[in-house]
Length: 328
Image (cartoon, rainbow, N blue to C red; front, side, top):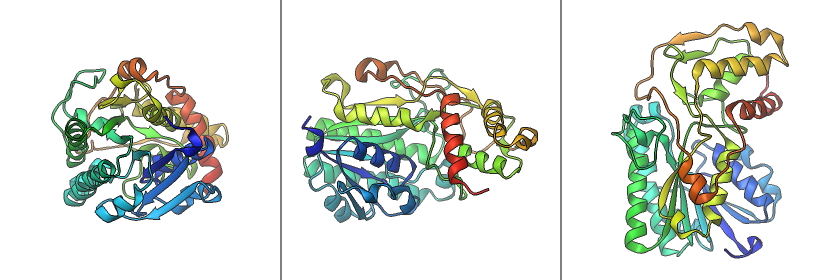
């Protein structure tokens, strides 16, 4: 890999939750960073510190437009492709737009990266790819049938990446994200992620609503673990480590009840009233898988992955950030 100061990264979806954290991280490391975003779900305020860095460049564009992709990838050594329409419920409500962004947009970006001869294409895959596979922990080579349009799109991404690696020789690495949370994650909107939404509700003394009885479990993954995986994915020189997919997780699972109790505990240290906020239980959500737990053995073995933040450690960091950034 070239010297960091001479290395340019294109981060698509760079104004989003994960993308903006990646932009900030790699700028502090001395990389040159190009951000491509259409601000459909990302926010300019997520990039406020990036704008102060002379090594940062924003291109406002849409991955559904091949010309935008071709412009953005010019001069890039590596692509970190985060741009997507997330959310299982959104994909059930609007499968066409989800497919346009997540499949056609992905293919545009992959093609533009191939034509620009980037060194490696690292992309956000998803734990939803495991679908109806009931085995735990989830191992990369064993998946089930998808349970939502969103899950289909993320699996198709993996198939396209594999074909491009075999056919055109472009190096690809897919990172199957498991329930990522942390600073900059948006608590607002119809498809807000569960942790920031719960935090905001608890801070406002409102009862959070859990889908189902709270027994569903997830491998909640703090943003800094995800940043570590992305960095390992672009810096690895292990040829066995490329052209494959990795679980990107902590390797532990907690129920939604566990999650709420931790949040109440940590937030109550600042506001004791939160300890007594009641939890409300609603119906299960369509397309949800009951349990999720990642095996991270492959990432440990081939990428030397070593996640630093458990759910509890990550929640403490996240709660501190949200207290400073969410108005009561």
